[in-house]
Image (cartoon, rainbow, N blue to C red; front, side, top):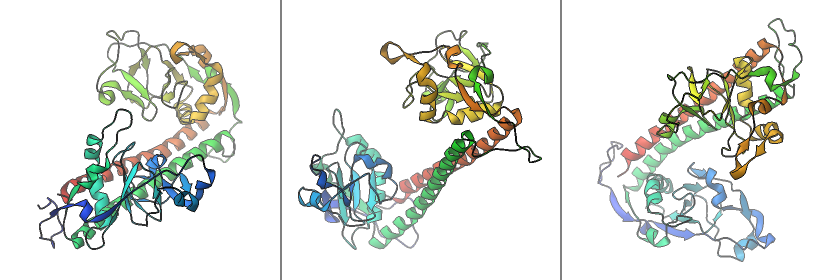
Length: 403
């Protein structure tokens, strides 16, 4: 067995081996939840709550920690650094390498590789390749899991130890690039969030080109800054939906098919930069979501949605980012929403426009703020695209560098 892509100095064929012959397998346990002294100690304890830390190489922190007493009075085991772990259920197939001494819950299986036989990072990348297969074979009606007997017979294809190390080191550099991009994206997102808070608290103010201050912001009701044009479909527009993370999206392109009625004559027209309020619970937004259309053409949306043209595109962009916050959306909507049967939302467009926010009065300032925030979003999107390209590059390498 020889992989498609290989470092030229290696020629030997890969061997198919039992993982049990190349490593020491371990498992985990949950100390009794009702005994407080078993928890909040100095031992990181990997549980299902740590999904976000997995599939990113090293895991070095956990949401929950346990104590020496918790270890001593349970079947939990302290595993050494460089131990490889894999989630057997509820996130099945996610893996990581321990950065420090850690324990794990019973939802995980771990391996301590035998020195000179199997490189721990090489094993990590093998598990990454096998993730889709792990997801396929997991069984269960509520929580899907992989039983331990499967791993007792689990075989992997491996080259010589030096080749394992070289492959793992090369892939680690790709992972490091991805992690740098992810951290940059997170910093930009935090900066954007901080800027929005400071803008609305007036801690940050923009100025005219000559250095003079713009007029003070004022409490402005939405009917003063958002205008319902009431235009309907002309029959030439595509049907769009609204998502939490992507805003307005083409139903066919993103959802696979159109969910529109047979006739869309009564659907609401959305022009570029218009604001759309969905009036339906979506994810962590129980009162609906508010988004600006960033589509560069007219589209149509459900007649249930409210559609409004902002005073300026810049103000619309500012409101779009303001309402990315679950808290901001809740604070604006919860006092004017009536919940109907089956958790439906009852609110008229007039009621939606009845409340006020402290907003810039100057149209020039609105434009300047909108452009500033748009530049931040462009930088974040650039990071996202680079992350996706790097992940695709890594996926291609995994497919070609392993048997």
